[in-house]
Length: 377
Image (cartoon, rainbow, N blue to C red; front, side):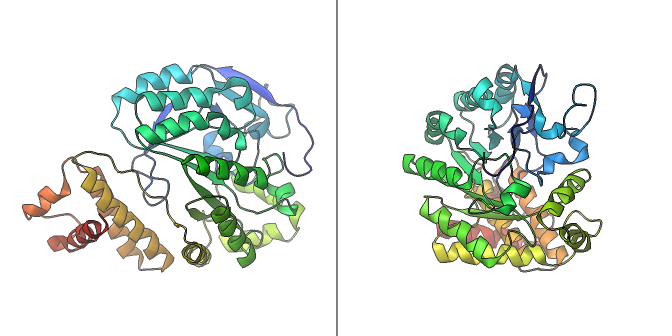
């Protein structure tokens, strides 16, 4: 642990599930490129104040007979999917290969080792795999991750938003491993040849959004062998915001009100805060020779060209968001990226037949994307 948090009562409840795999409607284009997820646990002992899983819709904050004695059920009542390996072993062979995010390296993993079992299922089925973590415990499974990287594709992303122990840590990440330990784990994985980098998210307004903090994270990522830094803003949902505001008040009593003014009743800031921060991190990544996006896994298949073109389009969407382009243009590119990504035949066949592409009269955008992808080969 980092920070001054005291030990708490933790309950691990073993549960049997009939489903582990979750499938996104669309690929997480321009971000982590995930189509699937498989979580070994419900709830998280690290208990970060800003975690989006605190939203009421996930049902992890509920007080009931089992959790009535707990201050924070989300981080103290951990449900362990003891049959997750068997279920995922049945689910993966039935679906098209695409990136799956799995693994959860909270303290429960030392006891149950379910993340390792799920990674081995991914390895057996040759699925490209992403791990997002705050913990150096991921090194326990570095051998499996390296095998996945060699057989298909693997990437380990460390969630890091502040470069050192601070008042911020005590407020927002009191039970998480130290930042230093995360960077040390990144360095070891990088030395092994694993693709790794930083998720600088969420960037908290008035706390971790200073130019000094942003550059520290980018420079430390470079120093420790990371290849990219993905920046992301804070989003607020029901249940999550209530818990966060209580934590923010410990940091500065004026912060909750400042956040209410910035967010209103919305999911994200009302102004251009995110575009400004994202642009700053993009420029810092360019300064340090890092990627500001994760490179996509491209399968060795006839549909590879679709994945390359949709990657290009999704990255254009991200850049247009940073540039605050008209929303209708962003929407056009995003819908076109989804169309290409989900096409069941090579998009080049449609172009060669001069077929009409919805949202792209004359196929102008797609032809330009194809030309750009051809240059990069």
